[in-house]
Amino acid sequence: MATAKLLVVLVALVAAASSSFGAWELNIRMPTARAVEDAAAGVAAPLIHALRPLVGSAGDLGRRGGVPCDSWRLAVEAYNKRDWKTVPADCEGYVGHYMLGGHYRRDSRVVVDEAIAYAEGLKLAGNGREVWVFDIDETSLSNLPYYAKHGFGTEPFNATSFNAYVLEGSALALPETQRLFDKLISLGIKPVFLTGRTENQRAITVVNLRRQGYYGWMKLLLKPVGFKGTAIGFKSGERRKLQDAGYVIVGNIGDQWSDIIGAPEGARTFKLPDPLYYVG
Ligand SMILES: *[C@@H]1O[C@H](CO)[C@@H](O)[C@H](O)[C@H]1NC(C)=O
Ligand SMILES: [Mg+2]
Image (cartoon, rainbow, N blue to C red; front, side, top):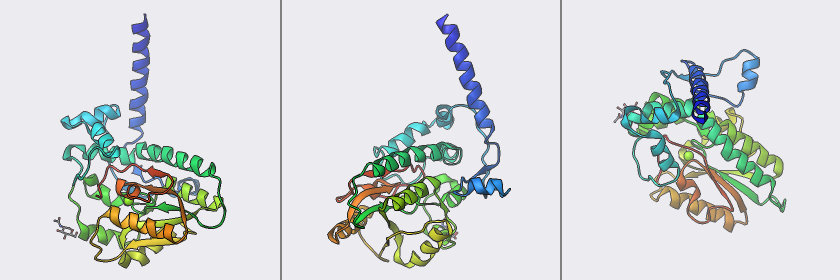
């Protein structure tokens, strides 16, 4: 009896899963911050990649090609897997579906919901000294249009083509991060961008951020051209300077572990998902 009931539930679950996969089809679009208004105005978000639909649960997707891509992604997020150079070749489809099929957005939403609940619960001094550190790439802006064209992280990083993409200033706002950014401003917490992008990319980075609707940040800290240290060294050093100048880092959010480790980290850190690349 119990087995029969379980079977009915399982069949229903499988049916639900396959119908939601059917909705992906070939028209996978980047969810933009303006998606709702755009839809109302009959403007479609830009099509950034056409994925062949796959059937089955995320676990089945993960096992396609014999590689447990879901387990690989979890190890990446938990910082058990480090110093990896590329996404495993067999996981290109898995990562593509993760990024574009709604899972990435959902995972990001959970992170930002936690960050907002934390920020709203803070006893703020309200003295203009309370700041929140934001990384840029894959945190505030998404380079997914570039990565979709380059194998979703399965190709080795190509600085020439990536920098050319950055100079277009066309990266898309990550809507969940933008929600946090705007909320913090309304609470009186000042956003500070701290990025591994270099000083010679300042102008286009400002243009890109403004185009995508980011306004009201306090500082934009970029890496000096020719900086020799590690990402952790650069970012923790900049956070130290902020503290020494009298700012209180109440929060820090990034997609890489190198954004959120290295004292002073900030009173609380938040890790957004990123299965596309690793920055050590
Ligand atoms: C990197 O990108 C540039 C510009 O698109 C291209 O000319 C070059 O061949 C690429 N390098 C490699 C190793 O793929
Ligand atoms: Mg980043």
